Length: 234
Image (cartoon, rainbow, N blue to C red):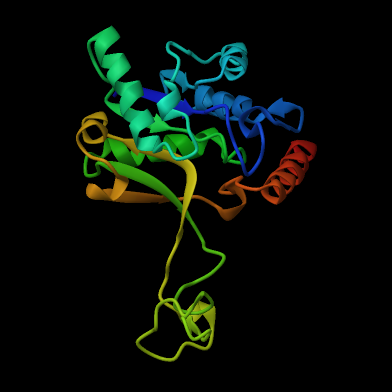
């Protein structure tokens, strides 16, 4: 099976400025994603989609292909990443005449993943029963137990009322966080649909310590600390 890993890394970021090239334990964030994708046994090539010349240069230094510049209209804060997926695949189809069997999206924001996590996603995808394979992890909160919404009156209520009284989180209905460790997707599905859950979706569970998603400065500090611990124990 032909598997191409794609890393989508635009130049702008509000939550963490210059997030994709911010140094984490001496390496730019995108460098971690590229190295992990290149180390995965199932991945044949790594392609970066970006609008940034600086990101392009760094990506090439780490061994990724940067065969095109992402258009500005696909690199805004409100640009759907799905459209960037479609753009990248269309470029391959137009220039190479074919699409990979599996598109593996490897977000920069989960640097604590391991290459084996990517291979697990591809292995699940290779079984042929899914349009999309997503990664999940144990949740920090559960909408049946300790997540609330606020009514117009100001009253707090559980997001989802359980069928029975739940006194412990462990007794609530099992739910999972959808993580950004990886997404394994059928290219034809991406080109014909507009969101993940329009197809058949199967999960691969990732240990919580490898599933962190960097979205804020606090997230970055925590990830930097955890990566430092990992490197120190290696």
